[in-house]
Amino acid sequence: MFPLLKYSESQVTAYYSKVTPEMVRASLAKERHDWFDLLNLLSPAAYPFMDEMRVKARKARIRYYGKTVSVYAPLYIGNTCINSCRYCDFRAAHTGTIRRNLTMDEIKLEAEAIKATGIDNLLIVAGEDPRVNTVAHFCEVGAMLKKMFSNLSLEVAPQSEEGYRAMFEAGYESLTCFQETYDPEQYKYFHPQGPKSNYEWRLWTQLRAGKAGFRTLGCAFLLGLCPWRPEAASLGAHAFYLMKECYESKIQFAFPRFCRVEGGFVPPHEVSEEDVDLMMLAFRIVFPQCCMTVSTREAPKFRDYIVQVAADNMSAGSRVTPGGYAVLEKEHAPDVAQFTLTDQRSPAEVYAAIKANGQEVVYKNWDNRI
Ligand code: SF4
Image: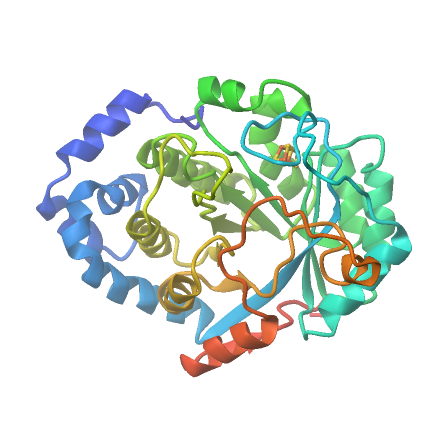
């Protein structure tokens, strides 16, 4: 569990099982919600209320985000990694992956291909490799890309507060760091070696980045590693904590789910689409002002629905291999991805689906001059 919570996993699980329909109804009727409301709306007793939750979540979403959907694209700049996450094909010992770190020219080529699709919001992703992916390197990449994109986000190995300060100065404003699991024992099992095996260092990443000035702090756990209800309770507690400690930053939620693929990692606690739906509705109701993204691992139909009621941003036309937008095509090389994308639509198809639902696509969500 999130360590500052005073409840154990078994107490939280016992609470979930005791939630009644009246408690769900009472939480739904409130204007301001606390952590217990989140648990009530995530409990098994909440399933029959999902239609009412949709109505309430949609209202909250419209109040804070109107009819807009922000779009972004991830740019994988390197997939060498010294960690050993058991579920990831980029882990150090995995031999079936073609490894590469893009040169500055290749990063520029990839960025130009993304920019040509209209996207102005870029997420830089890299494996953990201190030989290549240093703060200085990220700063060099950021300084180059800041001239092309109005918003740069990071999804890379956790850094020190000082490192984040330098990266913020270089142009990055948002950060995402999945905790993977809030259960320290399971965390140790899934991350047996490498710097990522340090649970605490990863847990306080958003706090360090927030203190360094980052505008958006992304939090998530990996759906499928551990039972999802205690994890979601921890995620909520983590968010309440960050909203207090980093009140100038915005919290962003993601709900990345393992979807079973042939020959791939088999998640020990599979999560259904209905449960992702319930989670996203509950978090939108309890945290109406926070950002929420819907993963490319989800099916197009679900993504198109959930951006109308809960999520406010989504990726479009994602490639999850270094060089996947332009470089590999130029080299006629195969695309070996970090995980399987369920939504394979092009950016234009994603924009068309958003517009068909009466929503507007937002390519640019921030300007430093504001
Ligand atoms: S999840 Fe990230 S840190 Fe872990 S092996 Fe994959 S790339 Fe490396």
